[in-house]
Length: 403
Image (cartoon, rainbow, N blue to C red; front, side, top):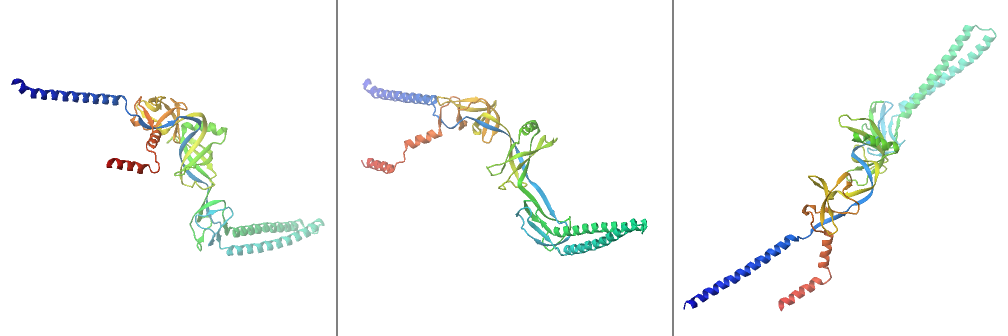
């Protein structure tokens, strides 16, 4: 009787024992799977760049200010009423082009008066010459005294001086009449017109317009004084090329270094330089700030790495280098300078090596990597885009549901 009562209880114990064993086995399997996952984590998606070697110019960079090659304040040389303006503000002017006209009538009258005066003085001179010649003959024949001859000689000299004086006045009147027509002295860009028609202009005082020559044009910039010896050395060997890029303009203007200042600024430690650019397309404009690069020399077969591949650590700069087995390792490097979006590497890398250009934050030494390009290709192979493929898959699923 006792055995019959214990049988259900023993069965229940056996049942719980079996379930416990199954649960332990399942937990053990999960533990093994977790351990395997920790040992072999998935590869890290990254972008890879190649280290290259090529001839790279050595530049000194700075911010420059564009200034006109020549600046001319146009003023009148005569006082008079401004009658006509032959251009508009902002026009590109050429040398010899008419600009302003001053009322010429008063100056024409002065010219006519000076012309008549010259004719009068020449007539007086001619009479004095005839008399002097007569007195010269009389003096030779002892018919007149030396004193009478000297008086006639003096009269002739005074008449001759008066002719020269009147001719000078005539030339002044002629120049004043010419000055009534003001012409452009050089090829230049016009600015604001300060005095308009029908106003009286004062000679050499009132500014009519300011002209700025922009073809060619100058760019003034500064570099640290410690580079002065290098700049002088390469400048003595030949013209140094200078690039100037305006903000938003990726195609730089190319010019040449024209001036090295004779003093280093004691407050800033900078040396002022000046360069000239042809500026044929007028991309550079007076007053504009530009990015300037002075080309000193060329490094042959310089090792270059993308700037975005360079990482900063507590011990300096480094990169992640890709190993033949598709794992990565940290490599300390030294950077000598930057060239646009590339860094010139002096130590730590050689041409042809592959480095990580993006995705460095999730890397660790020895980690497996896969490129994003490889992932894209695998996804395209896994789900090819063929015409009709989605419909067939949908119909197949529908058939299975019906069955």
